[in-house]
Length: 86
Image (cartoon, rainbow, N blue to C red):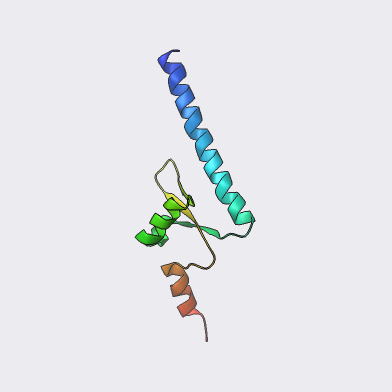
């Protein structure tokens, strides 16, 4: 196997892994298990829990996304709730 063939296989494997990870998150959203949020909106603990529970995806550009169960909130959720009329 040439170096170029090995490199192509590595790139193809990475692309496939990203495709699978995104489809898994999308399937969980479609089943009503939560919503996808950016890791920038989460606490370190929420990110760590998502990693352990395999609910996290990191895009090739380094931005992370997490499937957040509806029962959990982010600081943006709390700010939005405070701004609602009572």
